[in-house]
Amino acid sequence: MARSGKVTVVGAGFYGSTTAQRLAEYDIFDEVVLTDIVEGKPEGLALDMSQSRPIEGFETTVTGQTTGQGGEGYEVIAGSSIVIITAGLPRKPGMSRMDLIGVNAGIVRSVTEQVTKHAPEAVLIVVSNPLDEMTALAAKVSQFPAPRVIGQACSTRPGSATSSRSGSACLLARSRR
Image 1 (cartoon, helix red, strand yellow):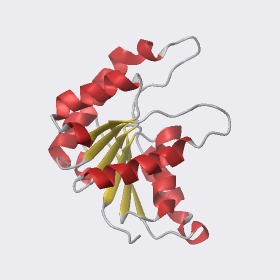
Image 2 (image 1 turned 90 degrees about the vertical axis):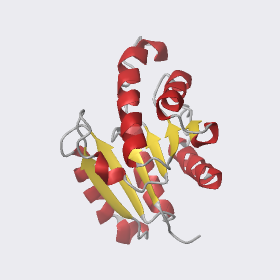
Image 3 (image 1 turned 120 degrees about the vertical axis):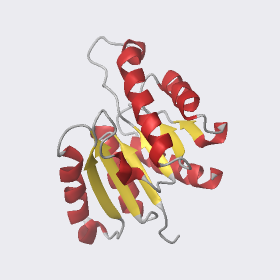
Image 4 (image 1 turned 180 degrees about the vertical axis):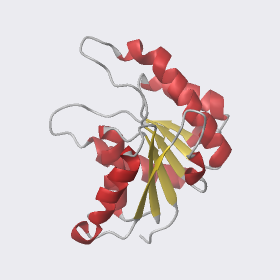
């Protein structure tokens, strides 16, 4: 498969950064963009990923961009055909996914607003918890047609390949465009 297009991963935590790395290694996109609100984190991770290109044998460009809560930096996602939202607070011991709904709803709403502004033709893949509620929120805020908003759960079982599922979801999203 020839490389084409651009995919963005919003959220440079463990899941997001691993997903961006795997998508770059698949070598099916021209560019993988990784964003986060933590100053310098996505740029540093993108540099590390880019330096693995000759070892891992991929040519995909990896771009990191710090984004602000007011929408600063999101212009880098323009032209993305797929945006994967991994941003949100992780669960702490004793918390349920539903305990995250208030904070993560604000994050997912803000990110989705920026996606509709800068990448209005993108397919959204939502990974943030609680998944069903965040996917419904992204669909409502974006007003994208149902086939363009996908919720993507992952297994936390030892040995499961969570990020390979994101790759499969990206291939599915490409087919829905």
